[in-house]
Length: 155
Image (cartoon, helix red, strand yellow):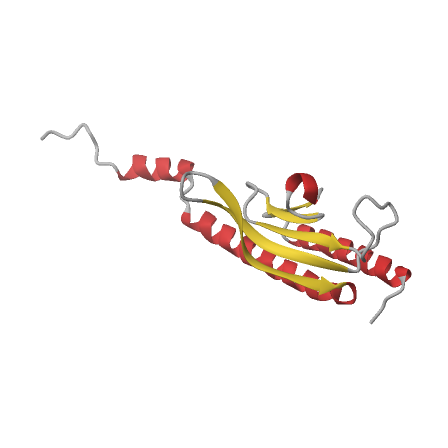
């Protein structure tokens, strides 16, 4: 199916609005950035955890033949996406390792939003699980002071 430039533009704007909605829905754990994939290597649209830069969900615009990112009038005909984590490698280096990727046509932008939302929801749940298992240092100190045996007892 060939879409008009107006339809492609409308889909691009709907994807952008949807990504902002996802950021707002998971704002406690997620942040959304526009990036330059040539400079940062992620994509044009990237979701990161609030704390840190890994893992990330990156979306890169794809253009028709003969059009590239420097064209001011560019309108994507599809998007590629990658869910990836920055992981240590043998020898001490790190690299981005994908654990999911794909391509979605412009007409199917809602599918891409579902994938991004699922990723954000899973990461948010993992962050919440980790936070629930991580003791609050102030609470640990209070508990330790009330559970220690008195030191003034004769032995």
